[in-house]
Length: 68
Image (cartoon, rainbow, N blue to C red):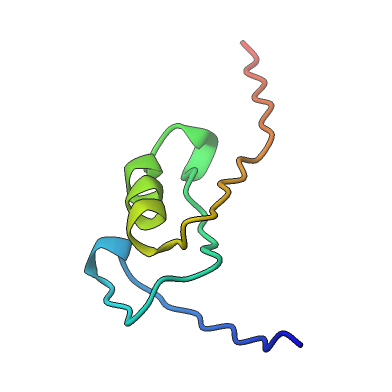
């Protein structure tokens, strides 16, 4: 039987201290208009520091239309 514990932490991933690695990290990292607030480096930092060895990074599908 699996035990389910969900802990929500707010803050910069580079400043958070956890006692152990985690199974899942959920983050909104694309920023607004998909161009600003590039958080890819923070997501990769979190992946390398906090996720257990069997990790999977799921990227969203993106379609961007620009009209003139």
